[in-house]
Length: 170
Image (cartoon, rainbow, N blue to C red; front, side, top):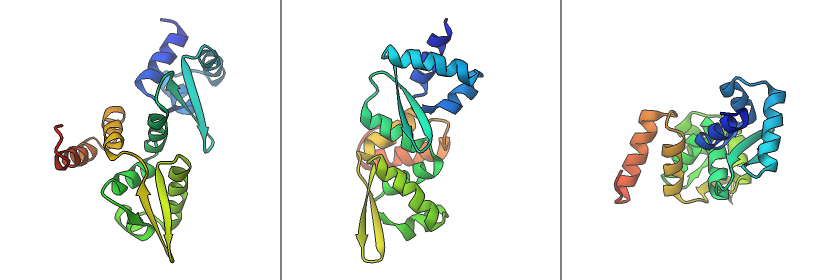
């Protein structure tokens, strides 16, 4: 299997992987990886999205909505915020308290999620209320399908519980 095919196969199995993580996982030099990724993008076999100083890679044809979600769940704090908002709208204080994060950390991550169009923010006086702007079922399925190593037991239990409440099978 050629180097390019190995890179493409890895990206297909790990959509939304960052450049640095890809280089690390494939144990490949940065220049060599850049060269092959440039060719894969020119050939239309791979697409990328730059956000917040990171570049994320996806196989060609990976839906835009899923790309945004994959980028969002690649960060642990953002993933926790999304899972919390899957339960219902929350204000900044509730998120900070439940996730044991500082208000500034909440603001930082929610801004990133807003940029991706995954959450919305509504000011209510001094309160800021956040809500999901995506299909909860799609979010939960993407976490379960593409990020199985993350919070294996906790996430699977939460997702299964949510799907059960919605009347769906595991």
